[in-house]
Amino acid sequence: MTRSLFNARSTYVWLGLVAVTVVSWAVGAEHGIGSVVAIVVLALALIKVRFVGLDFMELRSAPLVLRAVFEGYCIIVWMVLAGMYLWL
Picture 1: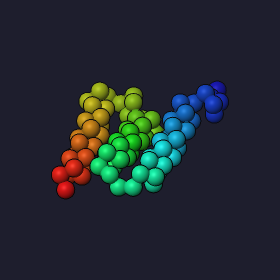
Picture 2: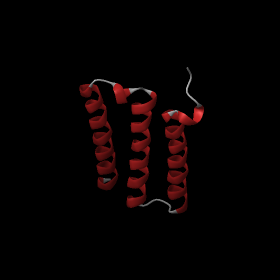
Picture 3: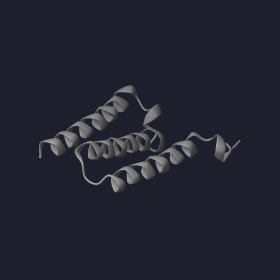
Picture 4: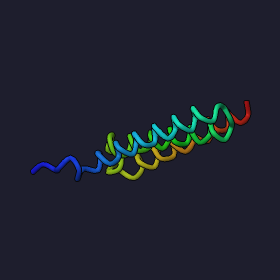
């Protein structure tokens, strides 16, 4: 039995990823370079990475340790990049 395209979680995640891409483009393009804008765009990018990892790489149903490592990786990468951007 196959699931309908509109009943699949991956369809909604993909639509969300497209929406976040459009929002991050609009925020970055309209507001130029600024520390708050850059950090928001970085956060949106890491949110996209998180959803790709959880839903398309199936880490949502992975063992808890693997998922925790991935979630921690996303948070640490965002903190390091945001810190580097603010520091430089």
